[in-house]
Length: 328
Image (cartoon, rainbow, N blue to C red; front, side):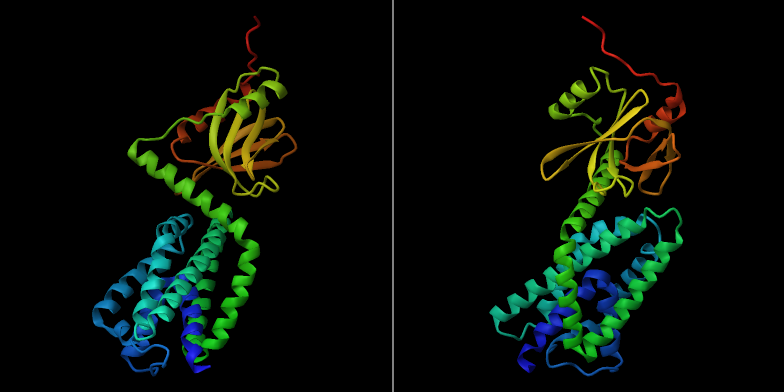
C-alpha cells in the first residue's frame, strides 16, 4: 500500500487543484511552513510549497479568487480563464512533489493529477454557470462557501487519510462520466459567451446569420415570411432538452423559433407567439426574455454585441407585424 500512496495523493491533489488551485498550494505550504504536519513519504519534495515566495504569490491569488468566486458571472469568467491554468497547475504540483519517483511512474501521476483537475474544474464551472441563472445573487455566495468548506475538508483528508480522499475522487469520476455531455455543453456555452465578449471588446462582432438548412426550414414552415430579427443566444433551462445549447433565435413578426444543433442534427424549437420581449442586464451576460401570452417566460443568454439592437426590438415588438415575401 505504501508504494501506491503517491497514486492516492495524486488523485486528491488533482481534485482539490481543479476546484481551488491557489488555496490548495497556500494551505499545504502553510501547514508545512509552521510544521503542523509531517511530510508524507508520498511527498518527498513538498517542502517547496513552504517557500516564502510561493506562499506570497499563492496567498495573493487565493484572496482574489475568494472574492471573484462570490460575484455572479465574474465567477464564470474566472473559471473560463482557469480552464487551462488549474489542470496545468495540478500537473506542475505533481511534477514537483513526485520528482524523486521512477520517471514512468512520475509521468503517469502528472497526467492523472492534470486529468482529475480538469474533470473537477469542468464540473465546478458547469455548476456555477447553472447557478448564475438564478435571479438572486445569494446562491452564488452560498455555493462558493460550500466549495470552500469542501476543499478544506478535502485538504484534511488528503493529508491525514489519502486513501479515503482517493475513494471520494473515484466516486466523483464515476459520476462525472455520466455528467460529461452536460458539462461539455455548459463549458462550450461559457467559452462561446466569453469569445463573444472578447470579440465585442476588439470590435470583431459578426452579425447573426442562418445556415441553408435553417433558411429552408423557414421557407417551408413560415411560408416565405422574412425573418425580421436574428440573435445569437444560448438556451437556458426554459427550453427542455436544449439547456446550454448555442444557437440562433429568429423573430418574425410575433412568432419565434430557436435553431440549434443536437448531435449534428438541426433542431428547430418553435416558441409560439410571444406577447413581449424583455431585456435583463447582467454583468457579463445579458438575457433576452420572451414573454408568452399565458405568462410563461423563455429566457436566453444574449451573446455580447447585440444588446442595443435587442433593446430596440423590445421597445417596438408589440407593434411588429409578420413580414411576407413579395409576390412574383
